[in-house]
Image (cartoon, rainbow over all chains, first blue to last red; front, side, top):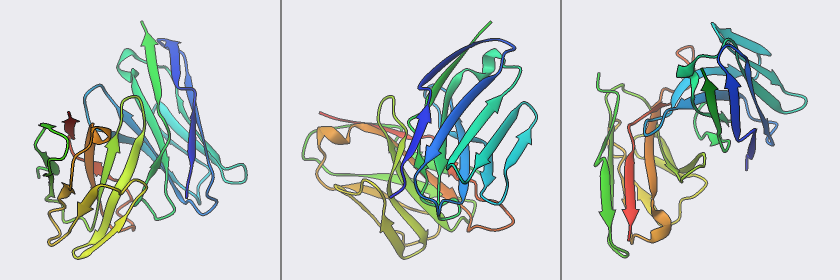
Length: 112
Length: 115
């Protein structure tokens, strides 16, 4: 089955700096790669996603890049703000959004 | 729309007890899934369904049963609770893949403790 590795497990940045989280996946048939943000005690919420026919996608301060050859994808957050502090999860699926396999999560702390 | 709802929010069981976690969605989504999230870890897929009457196993199905008699409801049954099943359980739903997107919408979760 699919295996998703996520690094780093924790990330501390100064407000205004950029944050980068990287994930690798094992199943070359995976075709959908979402990123979720989870605040303490809350449900995961989708912040951005990318499909395998696209190399990069951006939404305001958030961007995701995908390298299918190397089987890795990354989340980039620019101009970080204290409200960006949360746990971020990457995931992969070969079934177009169904049956997600999640990475272990990255706890991001944005220091004011 | 209420989205994805789950009951109960919290539950404490004794080892060997059985119970059903309820999940419902009002978005007419075809796909529904159950995940568990252990402390400090990512979510792991327990069971999923691509439509009424169709279910299949995910990554960690042992000790759990599901059924999907309607599009709206997808209950998760713990047959004989064990301490290893202490976790937060999330239900999720999504449309069939298409122009509408692939997003899975998560419920608020059920925090289960097995003593």
